[in-house]
Length: 317
Image (cartoon, rainbow, N blue to C red; front, side, top):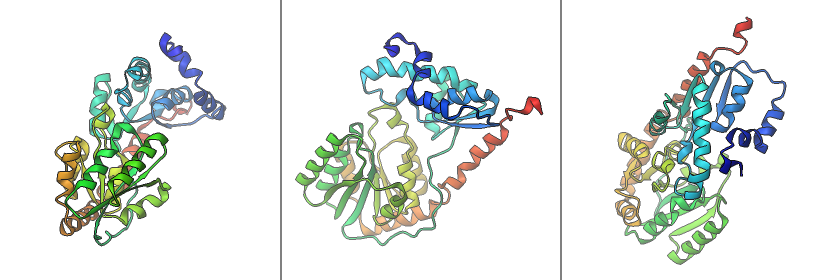
């Protein structure tokens, strides 16, 4: 009802999560704040003046689910309101990629970039196996059209296998994908997701990470996800679709291949080219790029932003 009435301030202030956060922070008087995601920014600005707040916008919120007409009608205007009302009040802002930062320019915002990179791990590439082991860990979201990658591998002329480790975002979709995997033969498997602490060693035991993400929503088209950097840090080759942010890094560092499109045949055309020598070269290139694409190269952006904030108690000093 509040969404339909566009009573956005009341909607935000009565959100149970927001109310719980405000109760937990009662009596807290921070000097500086790094607010993670747009929903935390209003709370941060209640606790400290804008010159003392840095906001990490992370995703492009107005494009999260814009393939859903009802979401576009009701939820998108609310998220746009949050961005317009609160983001300009922060002293500084960051997001996960240059494409997302550019999208926020339409709101008159200047946004820096801190990518979703994990910390550097001293890890060696594993020997290439037979068949070549392809991996895709992640969310079970229908908008990602995971069946395209499964069918591409099953139909490939290369000696390959694919294992998907999927979170239970959409249990019905996971069941459909398990049924599809069973029908495709023993090349394709669907397993449960693993804890994040176990993810890099698991990926390292494979040869190629695949993430062909169709631009079914705006946020997909702009994506530069943590999965991409996990692949690099785990020293495996990388196959992506022509998503600009991911494709440019694959081409720059030479640790994988970019499919011409997002459909099954586009993906299969790349998978068909895989050989042990090709994949071994990709894995070495990923190893060479791991430090440059690690968190250590990104976190100084946050450190500098926080250092530049004016402490909330400056006026009383």
